[in-house]
Image (tube, rainbow, N blue to C red; front, side):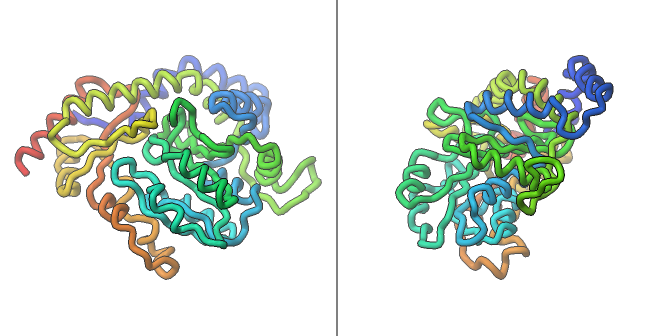
Length: 363
């Protein structure tokens, strides 16, 4: 049997009947850039996140960068986690600031709030907590520290569409950033992303930045970027958004099945007491991670390591950061993401479990 890590094609085929008329309507109107569907998606996604505004963009990476710029952060230090995707730190460097890493909690994989205040200096401008794998970071203490030290908080929710913290959807604070890469819980048919915020000025700045710094056509107020979501992607996302809550519940059901079947076999992910995990990823842990990954690949089971090289160990940062983050480094050697997606079948789950058990019994 072959089990994909994420079966985007399966979801696409399921939705094809509903999606094609929406895509054809865009073709008929030919309003491919900044069409009416962009505003409709922005309104719908802002409402889903319980935020006032949404700015549709080309990627989650641009959402993070534009958020920093919209808050005027072009120098100083920005705290984030070292076990995220590279973009989280990259955009901090790109805007002219310095990424400062704080190690993560071993159970949640998110920023360790007990270590956070020690990293704050008079140069610190902001904190970017990452809601890794679909589980929110512990936001109350982060927001309290930010208020105490007069810091901006921008939440990297690129893996946490629909995740909840104490009953509230991410982002928990004022502003958060999302990616709609095809494999995400809410994925487009290409690259796209968004900022959601309650801050009107952040919204206005992001609108200008995405369109060459324009407020009105040919009137450029700032040096901007070309980062507009295509209208076709907007209609796809608006249609798929209708299914997101149900898809998250299906992911959670899949996680419950893995929990029950793999209990005592391998180290399982922990859903924190404050969180409703959206399970973008289901991450197991073992000291024999590489051997397990190879074994599962031989059995036709696709897996991914998120992430094998921590950001501070990347070549791009090797001369900028000489600190050690032991929990992050430990996790990078032991974590393995196994297949989870709404359309995964009972048979596929059992096949994955059987092969993990077989490997662990032999090793």
